[in-house]
Length: 143
Image (cartoon, rainbow, N blue to C red):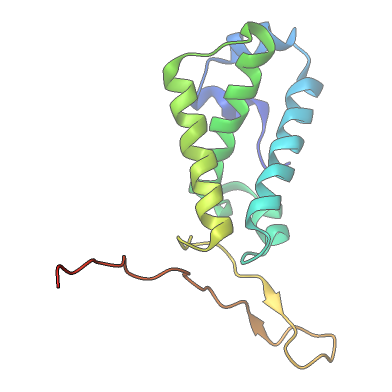
């Protein structure tokens, strides 16, 4: 698994996590799987989601872990309270904003690129091209 229950200690105490889930790690593991799938749905276009989420230990991306933990702790607190603090709302919004920017191609992350088959022979020939869409803002002139 990409993230473990004990690693949530950087965003909450394990006692609080256990209290919310009644010491049922299966609840936390299901939430982890759901949020990993959510993240995959945003980043699959440009990045190799299998390589990202199959990485272990120190090979895992710190930025992906950070945002996954933000999504996780938000979902955990919603289970218990149905409302969360402004700080958790902000972290959740930051994580979702990052995912949306990745999906649109407006920012690039240091993650393994998705391999693509350009000649149709069934084997990947290179990585996907990152494309930043959009241009400079149109300026009005006064003439």
